[in-house]
Length: 247
Image (cartoon, rainbow, N blue to C red; front, side, top):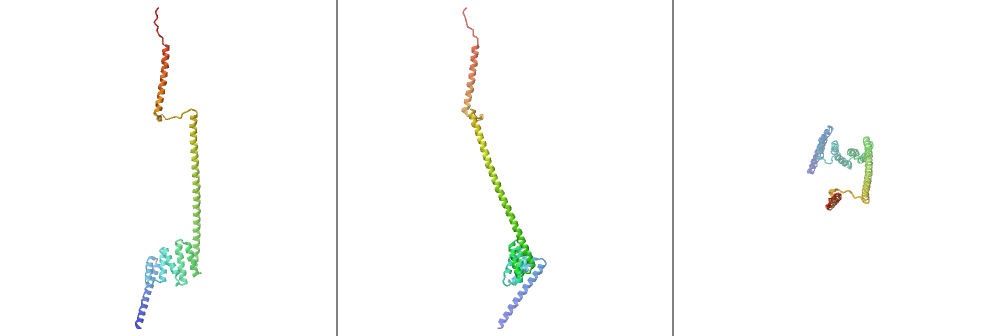
């Protein structure tokens, strides 16, 4: 019986010692927090949780220190955990939801922050600071929605303009093709007219075939020979001849 009593006393002493150490770390953390040394305060709160994992004060203050260091995601997760715990009282629950709303608001998660502030007000309807933050979050959400709508309208207008531009480009291409075809048809008509009038299209001398060149050369030679023969004949007819005559 005495052994059981001694054991109980030892356990109580051990728990009391750990509770004292927990409070000591939390007190040290609070001093550092007040001095805006949030990183050092966070380490003290973590030490307090090593002594008592279920310490609500240690968890709450740790989340506050994380929030001050702009670790909004980590702070939100911890505040949400505290607020969702069944054993927390209304005051602490309201404070946890309030701070959860602040963390979500800092991440521009306006809809989620609004829900957190509402839950805080359910626990403490007279909290004016939470009411103010709720109104602020609603206004930010409205601004975001208006901005999203404007961006959507701009994108739609841009897409419509791109479609119009593409349609006009296609129309211009079709017109260019028609104009080109018309020009080609006009050239072909001119070529046909020349053939009809007995005119041969001009040909680059450098593109004459060997047969054509020989034919043209023969024609020139024949013309020159005919001209020479005519000249010789004329000269012969006009020459005077002496005829021997016996008197």
